[in-house]
Amino acid sequence: MHRSGLVELDAVLAVARRGSFRAAARELGMSTSALSHAVASLEARLQARLFHRTTRSVALTEAGARYVARIGPAVAEIQAAAEELHGDALHPSGTLRISVPPESTRMLSGLVAAFVQRYPQVRLELSAEARLVDIVADGFDAGVRLHEQLPQDMVALPLYRQQRMRVVGSPAYLAGHGTPATPDALGEHGAIRMRLSHGGLYRWELEHRGQVLQVDPPPRLVVGELQAARAAALAGVGLAFLSEWHIREDLDSGALVPVLDAWCPPFPGLYLYFPGHRHLPPALKAFADLLRERDAQGLAPDAG
Figure 1 (cartoon, one colour):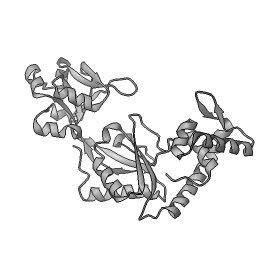
Figure 2 (cartoon, rainbow, N blue to C red):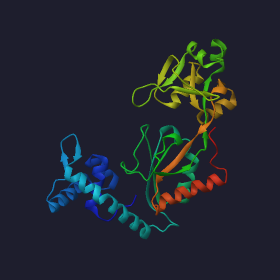
Figure 3 (spheres, rainbow, N blue to C red):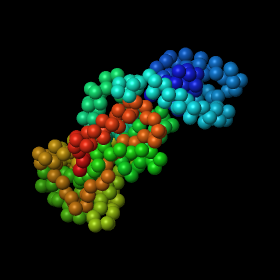
Figure 4 (spheres, rainbow, N blue to C red):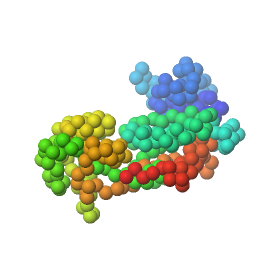
């Protein structure tokens, strides 16, 4: 994202987004003291306090919330105008910030590599967080989510048109414990379960001929990261429920064996999404155009 050239307004909006002077200063590439001075100068000129400050938190005052709501769209227009003048559409520059789910970073590696090689003047920042991020409020240019999680007021482009979850186990585990023939049989097996950011365990959603089941197999091991679940499945700890994209090589080699395949149909995959502004920032437009180009060439394959 380009700064508007209005340092004080950029500072206020960044603090409002981040809820922290330090984080806002990092976003704008300036020192915390310079940012604090910019905010204080604007408050003095307005004769109004825009933020409640404590040693632990920063929050907008009522007057500050009204002010940010009014200036936000205007500053966005100023930024767009600055980007159109500063960044030739053929030679994008600046920073492009994209929020992505942690499990998608490996999927994006080919697209990311192609983009940074083609546009060396753009600094691409991928922020991997499990929570559902408000890309506008948190200052991102775009985000990546599953189709079912997309905000309805956003433009969305398919990254991977389909994904498929698979119930898998190692050959050694299945030889010792048998192969479940129905979802009910999962209760007789030890499962490798993922713990979500809010603390609950990720349920295994199975579907067959319109019948949808939310399965909670008894956990033998609980992990918080996909690669840990994969490694445990390969080691024969139990059955795991993993995206086919992450274990395709293991499936091809036979290191992991799928079970209950009739209950694991494909579903709509990952999408790049962003606000539907008439004039996209050049770096975001370039990223979206490259995605469309690779999709047309068959370089963004289905993940299922």
